[in-house]
Length: 302
Length: 302
Image (cartoon, rainbow over all chains, first blue to last red; front, top):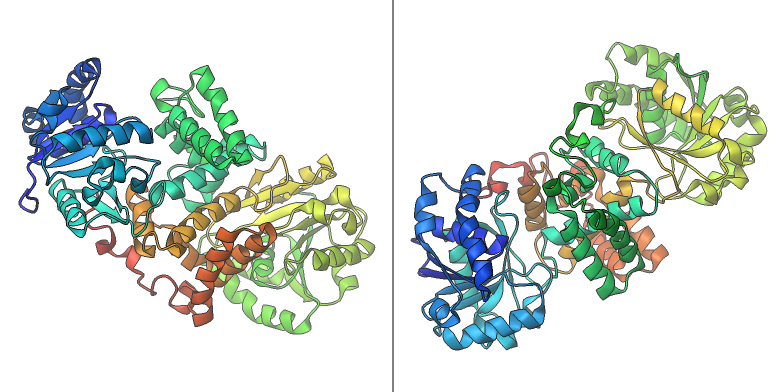
């Protein structure tokens, strides 16, 4: 906390990402408010947040002793006035629709203090799409988290109108929550990691959807040649096939890309069957012991 | 050798790949002829083959005791008649030009026995482009090696006219040289691994060439989030930036792709300076101790 003057963090959206980020902030000593416009979403969040905090500790994101303090410092609110009036810092994880995000920020702009920094955790949009609508473009930028259980890498992505002071405040916030920022010098949908990830997964999906090779052989080629613990289809199962499908279909539609559309159709068969990956016990592989983690999988490759 | 009826292997082209494959075949008990039309290329090859064989043994591709036998079983020839008249199996690594490859195969078709299987080690072409020109399309397919020092994964890629018998012979050959085949069900330029690799590298190059993030931050994002020992720029330094440049420029031209052209221009600056990667001591990183392998590189990421 020493490196950060901000004390009160407001998380917009009580989904899994919002809760994880809220817990991380609580564990780092911030006072955290988690806001959601839907009281039933808040009720679900309150019921889940303890388990999520313990899972983050299980994954060594912070010491087990910090769980209780983190939970004590988190409160829930569905009242924008109450949630926003003394926030120093906002991170937003509401649905991935620029109109919704713009409306939410415009609303909190009227409520929040002048100094409050607004950040979006968007995965697919870029800040300049909604910067003006936030009412405070100079104090607005993207701060994007990955799966908080597995990594502390975050992306910082300003738009051309973001002030140096706001950028510096976000850097300080990252230090305070013990996260490592990859700072983008230009806006890029998908940031750095996700840009590479999605092209890599897209290439793998295209090989499978065209029938060039089996899912297993595609993973085997990557794992065998690079001595990697996983290949693209194992990773997709971990991300969740519904998420991969949605992102694939979104970009295929936006870019009018036939290859992406074919990949989306390939994924949709799994999604329609309810084979969503690791979390449902079945996706490209069957869990909890997927074939790609067995000794047999790379037998003969050395 | 038990699983393979073929005894005599002819390698066309005495470059690094051809020599490595020849040594692997020799170490597995095949009688090997390495052919090159240029006597000076053969002289260079004869001078290099011993060192190459020891390097393969250093990398545990076969037991050290097999080096001497492998070298004894290899002969060099620049006489097509002499090289081809009793070959059972050909693997071709001549320059990556379909006209040259077609001419070479047509010539050896007239010399070789009826039963000889013809395979191409092409990286970028597909067999159907030259199948008819070989004179024996049914006994022709691609058998593509990766860096023989680091992996025993190979790609088998038939074209629609390849016979099942030829395919089966190539499978037996892979078993005989202790290699693991990824068998493609359809033709695909770049096969399986290289298709994914080139899209992954292309995404990384595009981020750097557009100025979105630094080479180091792009590698750091991939390595930090995936706990990988390397990122795309570290890998490109290992492949060699001239090779990456040539392949990038080739596909950018063929597909008339502005992003690929920008990536090629970005790589060309390194190539023009002579910074070709690991082998010249400098590329994206400096060798023998590149920054990405230092402890500092991922400091703060956990």
